[in-house]
Picture 1 (tube, rainbow, N blue to C red):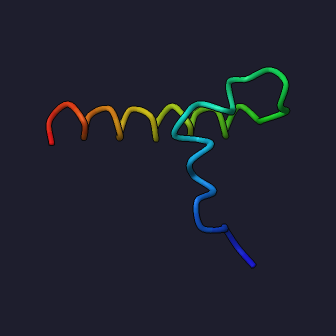
Picture 2: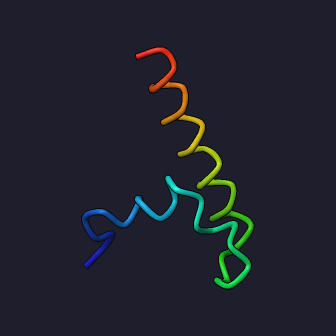
Length: 45
């Protein structure tokens, strides 16, 4: 089935850094990248 629509939202809001969930280091790095991209877009347009 692949990646579902909206699946990235958890990564954009940093869910992989919540210790209650068992995300991998790679998923945490991806989340950091997504958050940085969105923050840069919000800052610069």
